[in-house]
Image (tube, rainbow, N blue to C red; front, top):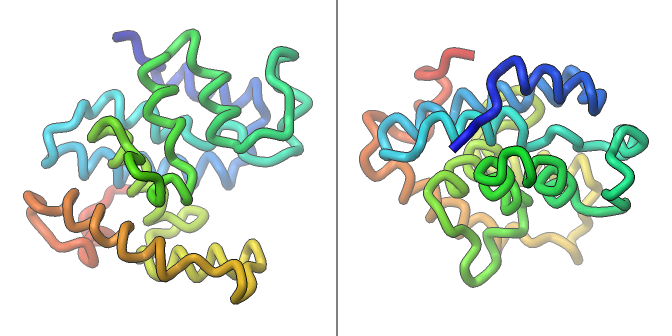
Length: 183
């Protein structure tokens, strides 16, 4: 399996004009993902590469830099999958299911690495580590989700179940995550 290097990631950030604040978010997600991968037996290099690139193209201002073969609008996870699938198919596969609502699917994940990147992404708001509850609340505020579209009651139990699963063999509790990170 060939994985992108940090230099490859920086080159991709440049090619796709990834905003600095999104790069900062991906670095924070990568730090969490690497920590979880360390105790879970996941493929650490794959998890880290996927976390570094999961939001490579995140905002529509980046769409003009996409290859002509990718037509928009598409969900950002799908755009990033399409960008990466030929050169780094394993990374693309880990990135593809990281959208918030994926966890509501019957079989949302096919690998531990997908679960870890998904979870780590949900623990970071911008570049700040937050709880799952906080992330849902901040997302609702950011996207102006009204009460009629609020899916917190469905999402939160599944997110907490995933957190419990990932922290089964952890050397600390989820609320202690921030203290163990090197960001």
